[in-house]
Structures are given as C-alpha cells and as structure tokens.
Image (cartoon, rainbow, N blue to C red):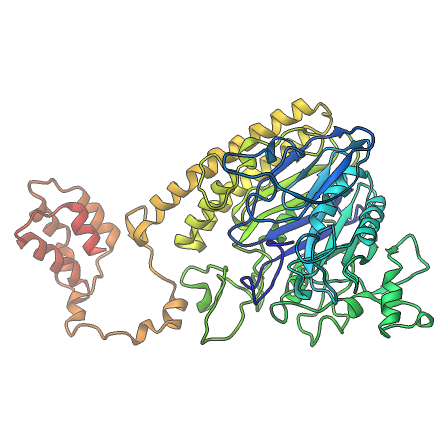
Length: 610
C-alpha cells in the first residue's frame, strides 16, 4: 500500500502498482483455491519473506497497531518473531493505537502484507483509487488501520475467508481506514481473500468523515477466475444475497446521502460510485485485466472510453480451461507477447527485445508507456495454493521480478523461512539474499535480453519443475520439521543456480561477442528501424575489402598455424580467396598482418577476419 502498490504522480514515480488474480476451486487443476499478488514497487521496497509464529496472550492484553510503511525495514519490533527483531542502528516501531488482543493468534507468513496462515487462509492486495481518503492517527488524521495491518490481523485471528472479510471490515468501520498519504488517487484498497472452500474480492475506502470505512465484498464463483489491477471491479451489489455479497451499511447510506443512489433503485454499482477510476493513465488497469483474461482464455475488449463508467470487464469469468499454478506464474511474466501490444517489439524494446520500460520524468516529452503485467520493479510475487488435505496450503514465493525469479514453494504449516529469503535490503547487495540472487541475474540478462533470458528461463523452468515435484512428494507429510528441511534444501538448489548465473551470462555475452568468439550483432529489423542503411557510405574500395571468405573455414585453418611460422601459414589459409574480389578482405588482412611490424597472434587475426 503505502510505498509499494500505489501511484501518486505528484509525489512518487508514476506507475507503481500491484496485480491480483484469484482462481476458484472448481476452476483450478487440483481443486485448490488460488490467490496471487505481485508487489510492484520502487527500489526501496522491503522484499523480505517473514514467518510470524503463533502466540498465546494473557487476558486483557492489547494488540499494538502501527503506522505502516513499506520501505525497508517495514517494521522493527519484538512482537512478530525473529525476522522483525531490531538490527544494529534500527529503532523500534512506535504504535499509533491498540485494540483488545485475543487469547491466541495463528502463525502466518507475510511480506508487505499478510500472505497465508497455518490454516490455509490466503490474501493478495492491490491498491486502488477511491472517492474518499483519510490519514492515519498521529499523521494528520484519525484512522487506525491500513490494509497492511488489516491483512495481518485477518491471518492472526481467522481460519476462513468469510469471517476474515467480516472481521477486517468491522474493524475498519469501528476504528477508521487510511490509504496512501491521504490522497484519493491511492486512498482505497482491494484484497483477494480465500480459504480452501471459497474466495472473495474485497474493496475498502475511507468514509467522508475519515473516521470509519466503506467496504464491500463479492464471492468468486467456484468455477470462475478474477483479475484486479489497481481498480475496483465489483459492480452491482445485490443487498439481499448474503451468500455472494458482504458489505457495510455505509455503502448505502453514503451513496444515498450524496444523492448518488436511491434505496428504491435496488442494486448499486460499487465501482461506478466509489472508484476514482484508473490512475497514472488510461489503460493502466484495463490493459492488465485484458492481458490476464486473455491468458485465461476469456475474450474481453482491449479498448474503451471510461473504465469506471463502463462495464468493460467482468467481475469474474469462467476460464477456457482449468488453471494450474504454473500458468499463473506465466501470467506474471507476460508482456503481451504475440499481440499488437507486444512490449518486446519496436524501438522502445531496443536491439535485444527488452520489454521493460523504466520510469521516465521528461519535462519536455509528454507521454506514457504501456503498463505490462510483468515488471522490472516488482519486489516479489506470491501465489497461495490453498487446500485442506495432508500438507495443506502451499505458498509459492518469487523474489524480485517474476520474469527473472524462481517461485519457491513453502508449506503453510512450515515454521521457518529459508534464511536467504529473510534478507532483502534493497540498498545493500548481499550474496546471502535470495532477492539479490534474482535481481542480479535479471539485470545481468539485460546485457542481451532476448538470448540471455532464454538461458535464465531454462534454469527457471528446471527449478520450478523440481519445485512442483517436491510439493507432490510431500503431499502426505504433516510434520513441520520435515517440511522445513525439504523446502530449505530446494532453496539451496535455487541459490546455487542463480548466484552463478550472472557470471555465466557475462562470460557468454560480454562486449557483444558470443563466448568472446563470434560477434552477436543486431537484427535486420532493428538495423532498418534505426537507420543503419542511411549511415556513412561504403569505402570506394569496399568490393576489394569486403570479407567473404567463410569465417569458420579461415578460423579453423588459422587455428592450426604454429606461432613461429604463423604469418606464412595464415597466408596459405586464404590462398583460395585471392582470385575472387568479393573475398579479398580476408586475403588483404592476412597479408597486411604478415607485413606488420608487431607480433600477430591467431586470435588477433581471426577476430579481424570475422
């Protein structure tokens, strides 16, 4: 929320946001409910994966509530286990309020937001715009809860999604809800909340007083999927259908008081009334919704006038085929490849088809980039595969950008996070950090994106294959210690592969040579697009100087020459080219090198020839 999944053009770099997907149990391949989120933030984001242990609490104890920041470190304290314990130079976080504590809180995993608890309750988050916003207590306002805190409290106290929705909605109504910086542009939030039986889409924003909240939730049909991309999606609420809709009374009272809706009018369009539309630019949300639905086999429009006023995309939809976790991973790696919006094409992708578009702050050139689902500035992506049987729910966690990460599985019943995944200071490189293994490898691949990413992808696929096999092999295991050790061992395998990858890529592609041997060059399409053919003309003697001897043939011959007789030997290697003008360059260069007053090595000559 605060610094991660938001857009505030006047204050922060534009384009920061998160994408959520939810898959109903009858729409998934294995019958699990699947909930996902990418945390697409800036470079200061805290990407640690932490385990918060279960705890018993004394009667009349109080639960502290903190002002939530998402830059590193997002929290410092003794109340959430070792992951959040203070490090040298860090100060303890200070509460902005308290609420009565329950007698027992459940164990859960979290990053910026709560992800999944020991009972398989899972959560994903996406910041939205809203008609109203509020500020936090101690920070210019009176609201106590952000979505960060609400997500954690839900996992601490509830086992199922329906009760979790009611709990956090009620707390926000009672104590107030605040979004980002008090600005309506990023003042609202969405969650996907699910358990092994059902899932909900949850929307929330402050009420006009800044001391309470307006919220609504809609159940996702078991055989449907849904996509949320930084904008509300719930449309008409059926106030008489308590199975499929949950809501605060303020949904109706505020709309009625503002003259936006009349009780006799029946159903109310939540998005039309309470969203403030897409932020950053048109298609910022809609393109991702279209892109994700396209990969789920749901045909939708790719153009519209106003995503808030028009019902362009369904709240939920039935996918063409059953969906597995690997398919979800691929959605988070999507740059609209193969469509007219393909971000690996065109001049903006550079000579090597790089789909990422860095933040731009030009004061003279106005415009916007397409907003892809895959994104270079993602701090982490998680997928919760929640089910009841045996091992139970599984959390798949991928540090840094989805395109360059490996999703590590961890059982929700596990009691530790592999150490490397708890280290993620974005300002300090660490070889002990999973976040930095992946960030380093992904950035190294940009040296030659189209081919280097193929190398990365081969390793990624192999390790995620291994991860799926590991999860399957542990299906009948319930002992947390066995689960801890098995997933930690797989994390080491990921470390071994990805910590070595940047060196491999550098060795292979450095200086535009393939393995320091053959020049890689550029594609004909890119050369044409950048005006290469309109560059300086050929030398008048270009015909005589143009290389046409087969480079590999010449190289093979020259490689066999002895050092002491190298010049004469190399001349013989090009004898057959002498009589053909189009092959004169190889002969010319060999003769020139033979007469040169300095020592010529085979590598020097062959590189010049080829």
